[in-house]
Image 1 (cartoon, rainbow over the protein chains, first blue to last red):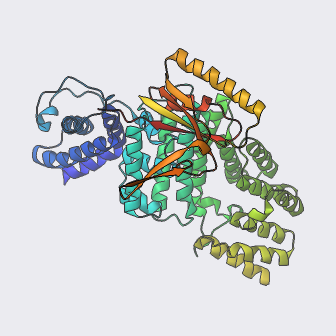
Image 2: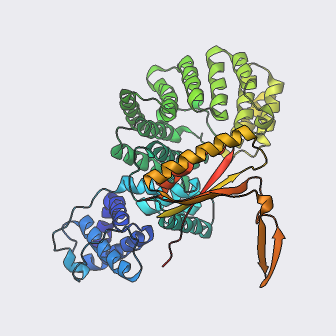
Amino acid sequence: MQAERILAETVREAGDRIRAALAMRFRDLDMAEEAFAFASLRAVETWSRDGPPRDPAAWLYAVGRRRAFDLGRRATVRADAVHDAPEPEPDPETILMAAFEPIPDERLRLIFVCCHPALAPEARIALTLRTLYGLSVERIARAWLTSEVAMLQRLTRAKRKIRDAGIRFEIPGPDAWPERLDAVLATLEIAYAQAYEDAAGAGDAADLAAETLRLSGLLVELAPAEPEVLGLAALIRLTEARRPARLDETGAMMPLSEQDMGLWDRRLIGEAMALLRRAAELGRSGPYQLMAAIHGVHATRLETGFTAWTHVVALYDALLAVRPSPIAAVNRAVALAEAQGPDAGLAALSAIEGPERLAAWLPYQAARAGLFAKASRGAEAAEALRAALALHPAPAERLFLERRLAALAQ
Amino acid sequence: MQFLLIIYSDEGLQDQAVMQEITAAHMRLGAELQESGAMVGGNRLRPSDTATTIRTTGGVQSLHDGPYAETREQLGGYYLVEAPDLDAAVAWGKKIPGGPNYAIEVRPIWPLG
């Protein structure tokens, strides 16, 4: 029992580091996974019998390494694997007595491998969560609403591509760095968006959100001089801080302006603001910092009691200049309505390009409904709400929209 | 390791001046590849209407007039390069000229033996 507890603790604290070190040493994600699983299994047996080792993490790494060598002898090891002189043949238990080599920190390299832009975006985060955090395929599949078999195939294909397509187990050079870093950040952003999608966030998605939050923090630790890394970590923290206030007691979505700020996580907000200040000192702005800054303005309501909407509009203008997107344009229109009145907001909304396609887009109809209601144009608001409801909103959002529609009818 | 950089472009679209410009850019890229030691080989292919496809179905072979796949963009040529990894191969692939719309497929060579 005690052995299992110590193992769980060690894996929680050092598992990602050990997995990454094994993967990098053998340049083989499958082998690292298998070696780590083997070491964990042996740990429970050995530690229950002989008592836990002095340094459980080093023990796991040493036994995993030993196992990978054995596996490697059977299979053909990649040509670029690190070939040490063959180690003597001690059984794993005696290794723990030998001098431990410190576990090298290879996590950043592993993240860059798993988030290579040549891999499909949906495969990247699954691969990262699997190889770095050891999340089970079943758990990842649940978060992506796909079958375990399909997820396993996706992971297998990605690992095979890494092995055969010449994806190198190295930190990218300066030429490739911006593109590769973008791919890492985009991967984390997609993972978090996936977790955020389900507003209830009670089950698997909340789990995934916590992992993504952790991963973004790790990235800050590993690449502290990249302002966009800090920006994304701040963005995720600010969004996550409001999770407890996103639903009311009936399970309906609560719009930001009506949320109970007492439920916001002040610790996360504080962390995010500190990250944003550090990012600003580095003097290179970017979309993640801008998005985080927008959320930062909202969070400031906690201190000041009001939202500086003109500031929000200006930040959306800056964001649209560097990374145009329909969602940012819609959100800008909503902010503009707060700053200058609903007519300005509605004008901005109708100025967004491609209205034919927007009509079938839920956030657009929801925003229209809100602005029409604000302008006391009830009939049009109701029409927009009905259009939004026809677009298959998630349960929490459906409840919210239905309630708005009922309120208009009164 | 070696990578095949396969060029897919719309062979119907280009006018003479554009073609000349692209050809000149290919010459420059070829020289750069030679100089860096990355060039293993490469060729421009005649248009896909000169292609003949040998198809084997149930062990029976037959000839067809035309390329294997009728696509919007056609296989027009390739480079075979030596590169340390995918990132380096992609960097070469990005330098291949071809006008405003075209695609380069990067495929690792399966080494023999």
